[in-house]
Image (cartoon, rainbow, N blue to C red):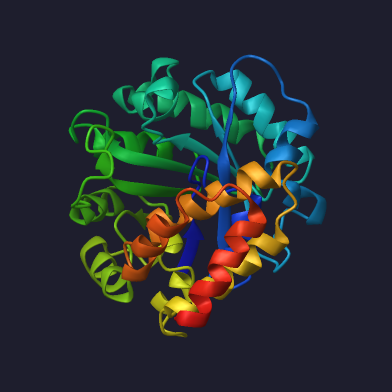
Length: 313
């Protein structure tokens, strides 16, 4: 089994990658996307999004980190892929699944799933500029409005030279509404000859087992589930039990202490609140605690609130 940490825009930054990979079980991280329009981006852009580039493109615990690019211009994406590899990225990932309206309006992300030919051209050009020993992966959804092009899109990506593909088992229009259509991943896996990673609605060991059974995949990608249950990767590898609420509170405290964001007083309390919205999917106490800390604005107040909650847990 291989477990990849999903690239959740605005959520899965390098601080969260550092914390979650330190718990074990995660084999690969993919960064939040870097938007590519026309310019060849400078090295500082890649390093700002992925400080792990200063550490041989690995988190502090040694988990490889792969830069993800998003755009629609094959030549520009290829040039920036080359630059990302030059500054040390562990391979390249292409985003063909982002459902955000702003991204799709500018012809990036999931909207490209309407055009298998464009997917082919992008992947082919990026692949041609990359050394053969570097992995090129792509992330897709099952389609934009419907699933009619799901298999054709995956085949275009595979035929163009991608090494791996991750499939979020919903269309763009379906967003994150359940269920995830894992049986469609099985159809895609049977239609192409490269490894397929299954993504969508994996929140527990039971979910992981059912996803693997239905999709036929041994590779899984976790995102919201990893935030809801921080040690999910270890749980689905059957190495640990899910974290208790006291363990989760201790982890939140650790997260606040490892952060080095320049505007902590505004940033950190809001990040904890954001995290709690995901945790409530697995930890019923998280919703109550979220209501309790909703008006907190400083890191010191948040640490004190966590301390009191920990004493009563």
